[in-house]
Image (tube, rainbow, N blue to C red; front, top):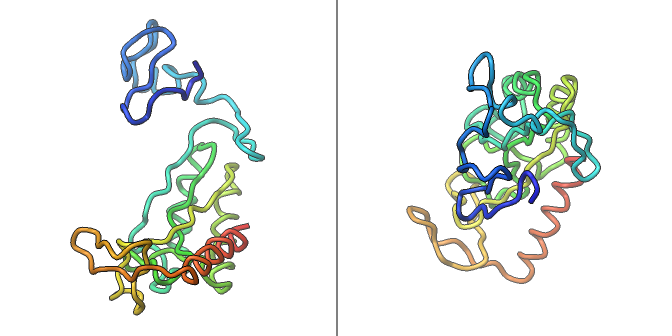
Length: 195
């Protein structure tokens, strides 16, 4: 069994030494200044290649939503970049940047980071440079809010595969085949801009 195998639905990952999930392995030093997670799990500090990306270690920042750090239109700005740069400087192996909006109809919160237009590329490129200057590669999470999108923020109807509303949200507009094609291109366009 590999280091990251197991059934994530169960919330448990079997340990090769037979110990309880979440418990320190036999002989592990206690967490803290003398130990820490890398003492208990030495593989965390070993390099790995994921796809074509070479990571200096296996510590990966999850894509966190930085509510309010991007500009009102979704552009990355100096404050947004500083947030990510500080984390990149901490020794992470990779930084996964938060959900970036591929189509305005998927807006979920104010200042939602965006990648749906070429005008966002300069800010995202500066963000990638700020992260990479400290070593880790940066990847961007592409996003559309679907039924949890907020039309009052975007000025356009929320689009979703079906007209079933999320709790506390308005009924979204059911996507047509043409809307699906548009969204496929929106994700492809976001991926091209993220390169």
